Length: 352
Image (cartoon, rainbow, N blue to C red; front, top):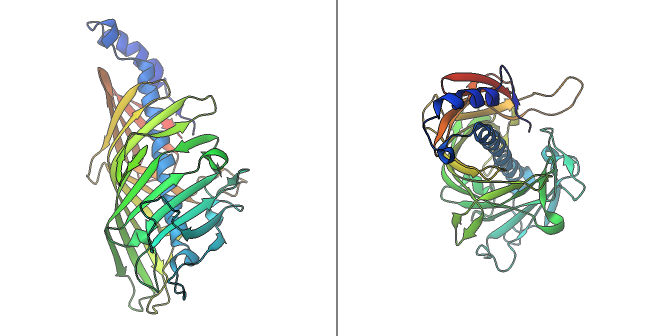
């Protein structure tokens, strides 16, 4: 993702303003205009990259073949199926959790999403290659919905391939651990025929670099083609709502209406930019500030990209030592690629 600064330019404004506002500080303590731009770019890029990881994980586990496991061997099936949302070449495979994992039990499962070493152009217009791994304890029911994202207190770990299986998004390598703890899950009928239902999932999302017996620490890492890295960790709440269509048969496998998905996110994140400057950011748990993602089709004319989860509302407040606070504002719910940055009383329009 490229951040474009419109108007007179955030960087130019900061460089000019900080010349006057920081003259009483020592050279070492003076805010740096470039650091603000770096923090804005890093926070926004990480937000969209790791949100898309969670979305892909949910898509894979919502796939009909991944949910329905009423087989004679206790529900285990070595299965590979296409994953169109990840691109025409992507596949999903489910196996027993490999030996050595703390989840290597009778119900332990590992789902692999393989985008191949060559890569796939996904429905969201981003090219991914390598593998993503999803590890969890399978729900105990032998029939019906086997999706761990739907089971309260279930924990799901998403990790990324290494070596020849290293995972890249648009040429940027993604490393780290993405832990999901299911806090709540509800199915609410929205029609008298019980053919259409509402789904709400609430998850705690922890992103870091190391998983030590379920404790996430350190930072995830994004490595860019020029070998610079951005480190990022987060501890946030994520609420998903969507419409479900089903046959109203006992043990149904719900079919989520992709276009209906909406996501709210709030909590804290910390990062280190590609230029080695640290920052912290927070999204408050209020209606005005929670990040709101919904399905938007922002494809350019003549292209075939599918609707994808896009931030359309909410705020991220970014701060750092001896630096001015920057507030990112994603708007009021309109599907577009616009957001703003406000710093030192001035607001600038940006696009992603």
